[in-house]
Image 1: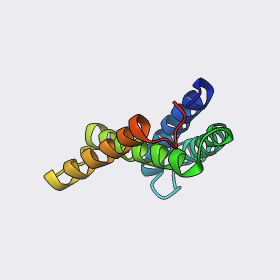
Image 2: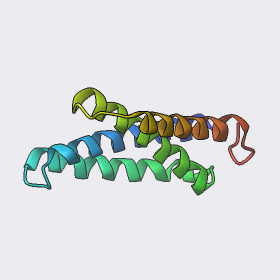
Image 3: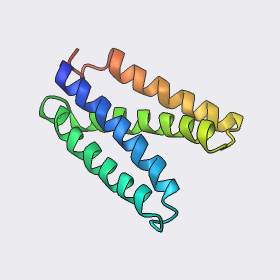
Image 4: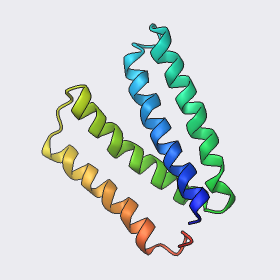
Length: 112
């Protein structure tokens, strides 16, 4: 994975987490500022995803983006929104983390 692709993938993940957090706060798009943050965040996220697609397989990019996003959104919801996570949710999140690590560390689909 080249440095540029990694940076833009990271920005895409962070933008998606911000957008999803704002989506919850928008209360079904009835609150203007969180709704605007949500739309802008998703636009940034999707644009940033196009950069790593120049050099990496789409499936690998999407697996990393969505997996990391799920884990981070769960953490944000737990920390900021008081969402409770049971043992099954924690185990599932652990498996997602393991999957992203396996792709990044061992897959020949990702150029290291």
